[in-house]
Every structure is written in structure tokens, then in C-alpha cells.
Image (cartoon, rainbow, N blue to C red):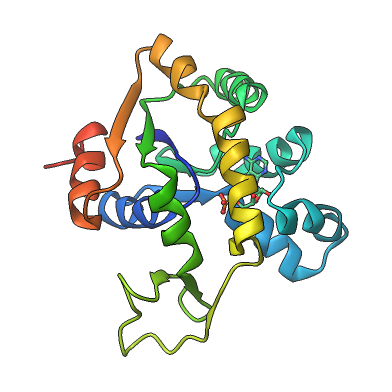
Length: 208
Ligand code: AMP
């Protein structure tokens, strides 16, 4: 299974990608996680990309493409979360896959209105212990997750609105790109987490 999953920030693509990976055994490749890990490690690259991340801007295409590429050939079953984010990256992905002699099975677009997204993002917390994502009200952490629970630097209102604007301008047009290729699947992301998971599993033909 080789799938890309995209959607506006807060649509739950990270949560769903995590769940789908657990259920199917596919590798979850999140470029956002790669970016945050690099920043946390304090590497030269991390320092270079920190400002983009904190502002809610996209990291330059050539950097993110080079970060993502090695993971594509590590396993033959993966779920790309947060990449591609624009047409140039979609083309770079196509070229990288062509070089590897493989193709994409599906492109999943998670759909939700902006108002719902802002509310979700401002309550989002990540467990430092498990990497799991929660919401302070709708999906509070269970007792066996010790935390601590932190808020992403780009989950403050100013960055959230900026990221949504970038999504609509740069990432949303990928729906046309993948529709034209006949592999687009739109999923209603306003439904409950298990319902959305079921839709996505069905879309990738892994619903048993
Ligand atoms: P995410 O966790 O997917 O929301 O990504 C967090 C941040 O990482 C983004 O706001 C960007 O700064 C950076 N990032 C992640 N994926 C990409 C990408 N495909 N292209 C450019 N920047 C990215």
C-alpha cells in the first residue's frame, strides 16, 4: 500500500495516519514529524528550518523533498502524511517514485470547514512520552499516558490561520492533480475518529 494523505491542519490527518499505520502495518511517514525531530535534535538543518516551522510557513521544497525521499524506499508499504504540500512536491514525488519503479495507490483528501479546524488545533496537545496526539476537551489523554503534554509552537492562533491560508492556496489544488490521475478519495473529516478511520481503510482497500 502506497498512499498519500493530505488535508488542512486539524483535519486529523496525523491521528488517522497513525491509526491506519497501526492497523495495516504500513510505515507512517510524517514530514511534519521529521521536521520537528530535526529541530529538536538541534542539527544545522534543524536550525535552518525552525523559523519556517514556527511561523507556520512551508519549509522550502528542495529541503523537504530530500528529507522525505530516503523513506520511500525503506519499505514497500507506507502512508505519507503531510507530503506533498504543493504541485512542485507532488511532481517531485512522482519522479522519485518513477525512479523506484513504483506508483501511488490512493491520495486521500481529508475535508473539514475552517471553523472546526481552528477549534481543534487550539486544543491539540502531543504526548512527549508516546508521540500520541490528543485534544484537551474531545480526546483527553488516558491515564496510562504519562505525558508531559505539549502544545506545538505552530498551534497558536496566528500560525493556525496562516497555515490554513497556505493550505487553501497551495495544497488544496492537489485535489485536482490527483483527481485527474483517478486516485483521489475525499473523506469527510468532521465525523468521529473511528468513522473516519473506517472510511480511509475502505478507500485503501484494507477494510477486511
Ligand atoms: P505538519 O505536522 O504536517 O502540520 O507540519 C508542520 C510543519 O512542518 C509545516 O507547517 C511546515 O513548516 C513543515 N512541513 C511539513 N511537511 C512539509 C512539506 N511537505 N513541505 C513543506 N513544509 C513542510
